[in-house]
Image (tube, rainbow, N blue to C red; front, top):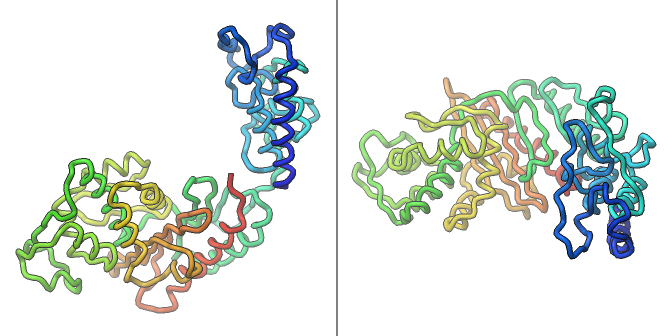
Length: 406
């Protein structure tokens, strides 16, 4: 399939260079002009059509018909991209109730003024929701387990997705997860909107927003913060130090991320506050907000937005931050399901009693990086309860390796 696409792309390039040179300026004055047309005159803006009227072949609806529209049709016909119902109708340039390379070639001829286009009105047509069913032959994966869904249309991975779905059925309601690539092209989820206490998985997003704040106001990592009474958490390493002991922000970040030390996180939280975190959460479309409590509540799908945001972080402290995330000293969980030669940045969290929850969030730096967030209510003290993290990670990783990305 890739060879076919490459052949047509080369063919389009050659054909467009030939036909555009031979086209005459005045042949179809009333038609939308091509962006590739060379002229000494200033190109006029396309005529604005009334609402509901379109030019056949103008897939991107910019008022012109160009080689770019033809390339979109090729990508659609090879299942690389999705079309809306309107785009499906406009792409069927030969009106044969199919969208394929023949339409791409015809649209290219229209762009070169070797063929004419037509205006059409979708407002007067039948139910537009039928267009996608008519023109798109892709098969969408249909789940049978409540709470499980995906937007993947690649049939090569349907068997793998079915295995993952069946495994979720065995787990029942104690496990939720959300998978997506870092560009949000694909997703697979299972009950990913169920809300849990974030536990320590929120520490990584908090530190990321904190670093942005520090860079904005030129606050160095060497800034000292002093341990106060009431900030020590039992069982955490920094709780062994006396009140008044000073630690640099760099040291506190190390302990908060690598060792998940609550005392270190409490000191950062009290010093830097929550406004930077909440502003960043709103910016990335997350509903998670932090107040007086350090952790907050959210879902796997919502937390995935924060870990994609971490992946995109490119500040001056990126290297040290990513180094900490790549060397967590907490239980491996998702790490156990990913090949050892693949870098993974992650932050886990757990709690008991009223704050029950055993979670792991990971950025997997495979050839096509992806984010996997697994939120559960399983018992962290039972070794076999780590198995869902490993098995889900294994299956998701293999699916991701099989997918074709744009």
